[in-house]
Image 1 (cartoon, rainbow, N blue to C red):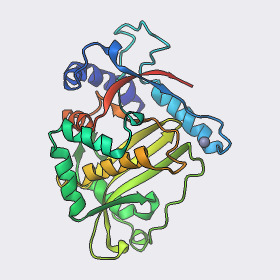
Image 2 (cartoon, rainbow, N blue to C red):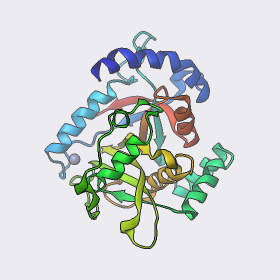
Image 3 (cartoon, rainbow, N blue to C red):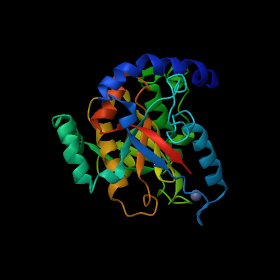
Length: 285
Ligand SMILES: [Zn+2]
């Protein structure tokens, strides 16, 4: 993976930069919104996991251009670094406000798909990753290639584990530190009344590090990619981030999903439809 990040990704970013600038309507990168990241270190609720997580995130952010460190950066200095794709959650007074702008963005198409998925057979909620090993395996194996490239689990077919079949999903516990956590949101296909019969068909992994929530991945089963299920899931997740009064959400400001240069054109358009905007990181503390 290190080889990929050092040598392959920078070229990909460079090759894609101009077309992505057009997709997102960037004229002068200096005019981009600046995101000030606060890792919210050393809170009274922090433990040793928080320290590891903020350290990892600091390294991750070093792949991006930090405005205050190099305000005069030349293109050579920007080599290999992307523009982070970010939703500024505080720009929305409510989830309704976000939905109104979402509607405007794609002439209502995204919201119509979401409504269909919502009134149909899907439901969204948080889940424990370890409660659904076989469904997660089935999701990963359902498609050999994704927008980010080949999926190893799909090529080297592992068999579902017999143990995984009888797991009873447990309540999702509150994170041990509200400022630093990983959580999973899932979209389930509803079959009958009992929650037990619902099948996980897609999920979003979220990682909060201070005022930024990062999305390490969104995965859907190939059979459910055109049904609006993942869009519905995404809207539910953003709604939670904008409106929830849970401590785990207090003090969050930015939702980041990679950069505008990452992965396929289709994914870049998807980000644009959901109102992700290219930013530069102003600083981080
Ligand atoms: Zn913490």
